[in-house]
Length: 145
Image (tube, rainbow, N blue to C red; front, side):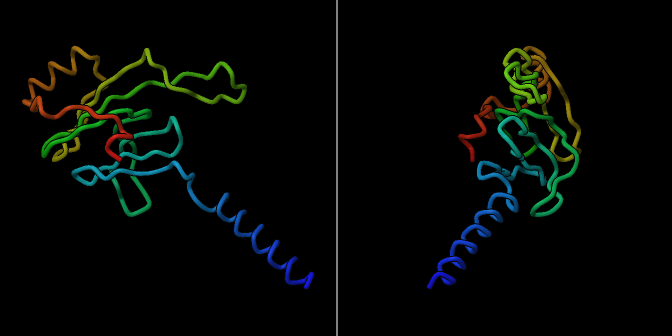
């Protein structure tokens, strides 16, 4: 009887270990966007947009971390991005969002051309120049998941 109980504990320990080390974090995700692009979240502050190469791999980032809002139509993907700064409470170089470094990006789906980083005023002007509809409104990433 003790051998069976020991076996069950060992099996439970191995399963727990494989879940902790062999899988992405439970909060990690990707969101498919038009044109083969995705929003990829690999940690709380590592949220970016990149072209999807397969079900589990992506190309080089086209819009860098930390993307907080996104919207799209048939021609463009637009995004709001916060810069990162060193966390003063961490001694290992951990970075957190910098609410003072707000940038906007416009990705032309057909050509892959990226415009950005843009400040708020330049972003509004570029959207008007490209005739991006006012109906294309940035939404929080968590709201579109």
